[in-house]
Length: 273
Image: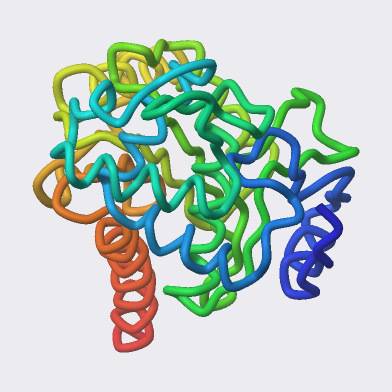
């Protein structure tokens, strides 16, 4: 994808001695690169619905042949038909025989599309420049940094997970910690696009990862604490986020928590002087 990298993000990275190698790739997105801007807008607004995200995830698994009736695990048949008609209109799928469809675009995972969606959330909902699928020239670990944004002058790193908690393992949490070390963001969010509980597995993985990293005693300085519902934080800088109630609102709750704690700390110390 040839979108220009926002200057604000380039400056944030340059201050950290980091150079972008690649960003905003259109490989493996759920929509064709030729999709018009108005249809991209429609697609984005559909993705704001949790049921639609689950629907397309299920559809990708059956990409060679499926019917709306087979994709009713998370929505009604009438809603599945509406989603199918929309995706056919924007040429993501095509009908291969009466009532059956196949995926046209070349993707086998929802991951890249989730990253694109989250970057658009920062741009459209938070008025913040954002890029996705980022690779750097200067990062030893390699791999993609899913979403990077600049929000109120702070560098935000977001790791996006489309799998349910049972599909996430300790090595992915450790990789998230390592990328935080290398990127040095002001805020890091581990976003799991699910309405399932974070406490049962994801919080446990974070606690285990912190113990391995710092040791049993030192890890107590990095307690995983509940912020609200299934939102958790580590010292108001690292957040675990899920989609319970509303994914976009949950991300904003976390960002505001960081900003509130960061600003109040500065004000309090000014008064002490």
